[in-house]
Image (cartoon, rainbow, N blue to C red; front, side, top):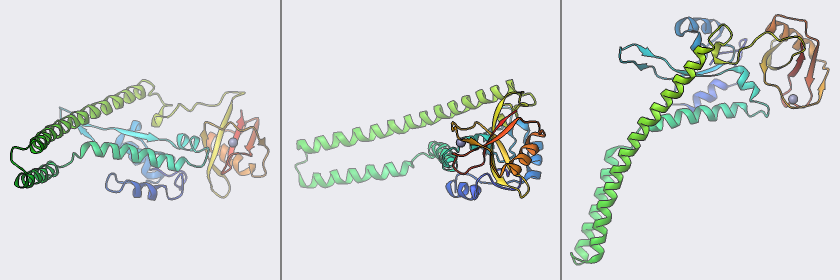
Length: 273
Ligand SMILES: [Zn+2]
């Protein structure tokens, strides 16, 4: 995960992720200098900067022994846009847990020894029954039948689970190839990090920005999808937002800058360019 102007997108984000993903993934925080070094190393398509969180899967070896690299990104803009109710952090944690745990579960089949022990226990029970009941009783015949059927079914299930894991891996690879293809198609200067192309705002366009944290003289802003609220108002803290907006966009020619009075956590701004 990358920092945005020296801060994590949410306090303790790295700590929470490391807690959730212990044993499944390594969580690494990189500062701004490191984001540049990382981009040089892995290329723009797999870069991680300005508050983004990127999941790097273990590289796969192609048939010619070169490495196939695959990653999934959550940009600060997406994460903050999705945080309209203050539960964005929990959603990210849940998404990462779900993704990693469901993948891990497919790659760890239950040990064959466990099934063998279960089968042995069942056989022992039957042999105890045999000592007590008449060896050719109907009950024993039924129990033996169930036992053998049970073992057959368990073997069948294991075989199907292995096939399912292979199919799921193929589906994951296909979905990834598709996203790579889409990224390549739009891979001009504006599709960095696989996020929506961020173009210069046009005259008359309305855009939304949200504060992630404050830097003393200015607020650190991220462009977001915006909210459906209607309580837009002038605000006393607009000065810091103004400076932050100038820093982010390199412009100061917006027509209006209004603050949302309803958004929890505050810091949501509507800008008319
Ligand atoms: Zn709002």
